[in-house]
Length: 154
Image 1 (cartoon, rainbow, N blue to C red):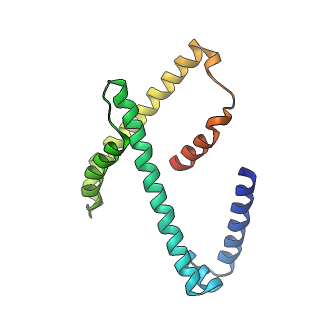
Image 2 (tube, rainbow, N blue to C red):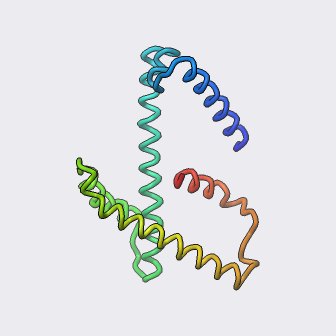
Image 3 (cartoon, rainbow, N blue to C red):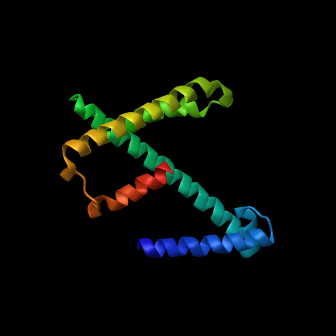
């Protein structure tokens, strides 16, 4: 399935690049040329569904991580509750129109990300040195979750 997906992606991107080199157009413009107004609406619907899917996977990803974190301190909270709390936080943040007001929080967030990466690398290094058999070269049952997480993080 992964090979078919890669083939279709490369075939589609090659076609888009050839079209883009002939006429510099947006996705809407290219679909409009190829399929008329139906193509433009198809692109709009696909982009809307794709962005909705990314947002939903982000909510699920964050809520599952928060639930796991809260379980470590012996608090039992459902993922639905965590999604609700995320909405309470994210909706007001989405209403900010001047992004300059987020400079300080962006700096703090970037610092926390760097700190988290350092902690994770240190923890993984300790885990590997103490128990090398813990590491599996390829875990087939979690492979697609890994691919999804990698694509999401990219």
